[in-house]
Length: 226
Image (tube, rainbow, N blue to C red; front, side):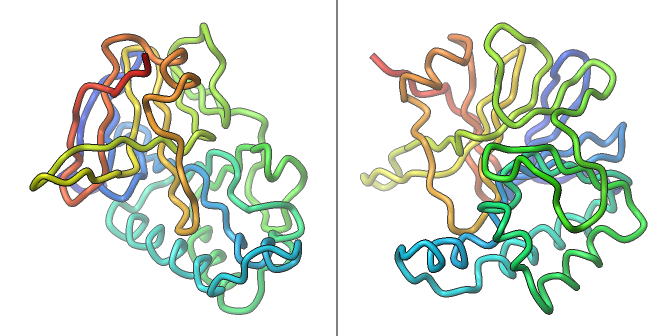
């Protein structure tokens, strides 16, 4: 794997990890790239259920951004940390070039699908499918378990706001403390939960950081609820 530039490096349970500008997480020692909450097929799922009709290009855009990280870092293992598809029918509805693009990404590397609440059942794309993935001192799961340590999870799509040039700007972010990481959503059509929400305030330690995505990830003290 190449030297990581413009990433935010930190330690978790003795593992040296890097938060990437894209919202992916890199574990160079394990040659591992981790992404969470791709929500592929979201526009198809919304149209199927009678929701808003969104331009049906988010799956390709998400896969293209993932392909850039895979090409840049050439990981031996890719871990998709749950809610990789917006629901199970959306996984089965993936077609054409999107299926081929996913197949190219999965070729010649270990690929792990961690189950999420949106995609808890078997997926039709091969790879390993697991409820959670322990790797040495770190456990990868979709939803955080309070009281655990050495955990990387997703689910909440955290975001935080900063003021720049007099205006508030909200960005997706990693939440990081000495015991856990909550990853941002990697998907194109996904919202987020503010870091100052009650759920995230209760989950993260008082000294937690929010590492905002951007060309250079920006760490700030995690905004807290009242």
